[in-house]
Length: 267
Image (cartoon, rainbow, N blue to C red; front, top):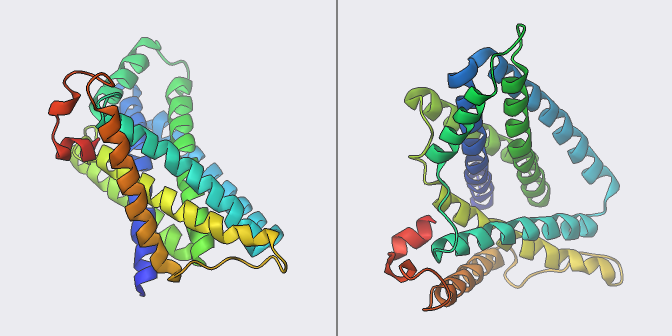
C-alpha cells in the first residue's frame, strides 16, 4: 500500500470512529434500559438503509458528474462540514462550549428511555425508532465521508475498509467495556477530523474550480498531494489563533485561560 492509500484508510477510520461512538452510545442506552432486541433491530434497519443510500449515491455521483464538478461539489461539502467541526473545536478549546461527554449523553438517553413507559407488543417502537434514528443520522455522515474521500482519492474500496474497521473497533470496545465509550478521546478526534475535512475540502474545491476555465480540466496544486499537508498546518494555525483571541480577558469565561494546551486540544 502506498502512503496515499494509508492516509486515506487512516483518515476514514478516525472520522468514522467519531460518528460510531455517538451512535453506539444511543443504542447502548436503549439496549440496557429497554432491551436489546428492538434496539438491535432498529440498528440493523438503519444499516440496511445506509447501504442502499451509499450504493445509490456513489453510482449517481460517479456516473453523472464530470471530474472537476465532482471535486468542486464534494470539496465544497467537505469544507462546510470541516468548518463546522472546527468551529465547535475552537469554542470548546476556548471554554465557550462544554466538552462533549458521552457519559452524560448516555444518562440523558437512558432517562428518556425509562420515562417513555412500558412497550406494547413484541416490538418496542420507542427503542426501535430511537436506535434507528441515531444510527441512521450518524451513519449518514459516515456514508458522506466514505463517498467523498473514496471518490476523490479514486479508491472507494479502501474507504469502505476504513469505515468497516471503525465499526468493528467501536463495537468490540463497547462489548468489552459494556459502558459509554468515554475512554475514547472523542473531542480530540473531532478536532483532528475537522482539520482533515477542512484541508481536503479546500484542496478539492480549488481543484474543482478548473470547471470554469477552457476545457473544464481540474486545477493542479503546487506539490500536488503534498499541498494537503500544508493546508492542515494552515488550518491548525488559524484555529489556534481563534482560540487565543476568544480566550483573551473579557471574551470568554474568566477561568478559560487557566486550562492547559492539552485540554484545549482534547476539546
